[in-house]
Length: 252
Image 1 (cartoon, rainbow, N blue to C red):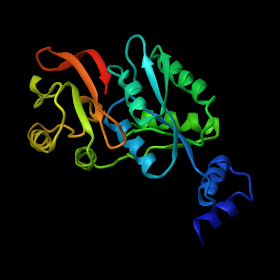
Image 2: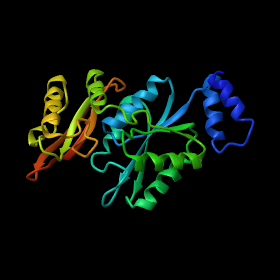
Image 3: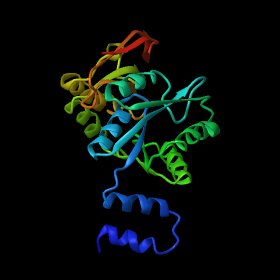
């Protein structure tokens, strides 16, 4: 039986995932999916965004959570203002949501804003964080939309290598592991530097895709940008970790 036939049979009975069945059925009927991308400006968000574009979907907006105080268990904190420039270069709307980063409130802040969008799905770049993925999925279920995590459990090496291969400008903005010193801060990965990072990841046993917090990134150019972003800042080194203190972000 075809996938569409299975979906039709399921919809004859009550199902808690009725909204997902309807949306998936619409895809088979030629409905153009309208999606928003949860974006921090880093490599994972950029890859998830590119995936949605390659599906031919209508990317309605990039949605960024701006943590205004403290830290967050779900969302990247530094450099998220770059998403405004990414959206401009891709001619996509940008929505910035302020949150205090409190565990029980930040998902509510996101949900309140997403509920106002006319979308079929939310796409995010979660790789291996069950905490992030499950909370986003539950939120989307409450809103009657689909949650897509196209990078979920993808090979770290395949992920980062694919970004470089397909022309994404992945800038390292912070490092926090043995093997990555201050010379990596502010570096944009290319084939040569990626090869070096791969060798270091084997030697020092860190995640080559940075999923364990080994490094943070911002994407300054890509195949979906009509231009390039310039990030200016000063590298700061604290002994075993360091970061780029960003002073200005501009686009051209």
